[in-house]
Amino acid sequence: MLLRFDLNLALQFDNIGYTPLHLAAVNGDLAILKEFVALAPASFQFLTTHGETVFHLATRFNHYIAFNYLETVFCDTDLFHQPDKFGNTILHTAISRGHYHLAEKIIDKTKMEINYQNYEGHTALDILNQAQSTSEVQYLKDQIKKVGGKTDIELLQTVVIESPRVAVERKFEQLIETVSPQNEHEGPVDHVVNNTPSSPTQQLPRLKIKSHSRANAHHHQGVSEPEVQDNNVSEPESSSSRTRSSQTNMRKTKRESLKRRKELIEMYNRRISPPGGVYQEGPMKGKSVVARTTAFKVFAVSNNVALFTSLCIVIVLVSIIPFRRKPLMRLLMIAHKVMWVAIAFMATAYVAATWVTMPHNGNM
Image (cartoon, rainbow, N blue to C red; front, side, top):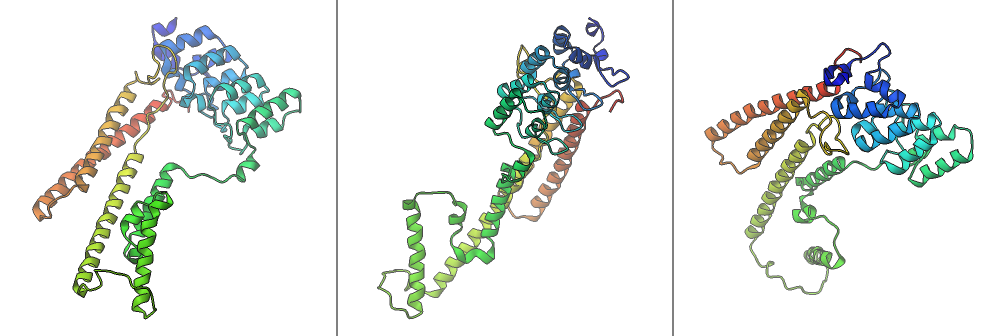
């Protein structure tokens, strides 16, 4: 086969924007597809002029055997879930073309997002509702609804669940606001930081403390209350002031700690995800489909260096540092230079990741 002599032939586009791999998928040639998987896995990342993957082409031309083979190799990778330039997934394509047996396989055997909306806002169930009503169509509707399929109108009525990252950031913001100076009179900071669901017996001591404080307040206002023995009542006013000052300093310290923890979480969330997917079957199972490219190797090295350099900076800045002007200024200068190193490697990783996923022959 020609690929054994020149792998670049697999990356050449014809006049209509198809590579040799695309033509093999259009024709459903299983033997040629296997050769491309073995010799030129990077060619699977190239899309047609309409943004279609090999899965779109095999689905559009109803090649069940070819689709089944590709699904076993690339199932649950980014390539498998990639929509085309119109936002249509392979499930949209299968239903719109009337290939319901393929659509049923996608629903039953894969983890395709059932309620994914294309750029017109249509889900797979919306497209199926436009088809002529038959027993096969009705059966497929029941299958889609069974796994949680909805129309676009039903999705608008569904409460949107926030992502874990947004939830964590919102939680930290609430914690920081709660321990701010204007809320310091509401109670100890530990009650806010440890704000997790607990049993009634665990919450009981805190309720007793609050009730005891209210009882002391009523006692000072002249309201008759049962006598409560309290050894702290007879302490001098200066002791009470020192206690309040100590609590204020503790709250400020914990507030700064919360801010630094939030910055650390944001640093983890800003990493770049590796481009492409991984093999699902065969001797290359679990390996990246673009691991042999130079750009991916540059990405992997640069991304790791940028990540661990940033983490080192964060660890140094949140450490306990003696407040001396010269050592502190020297540390900040070093941290500033290291930060530029991290930014440079992050930019290199971004360019390398873009280079991996972009076609290189001018057909975009």
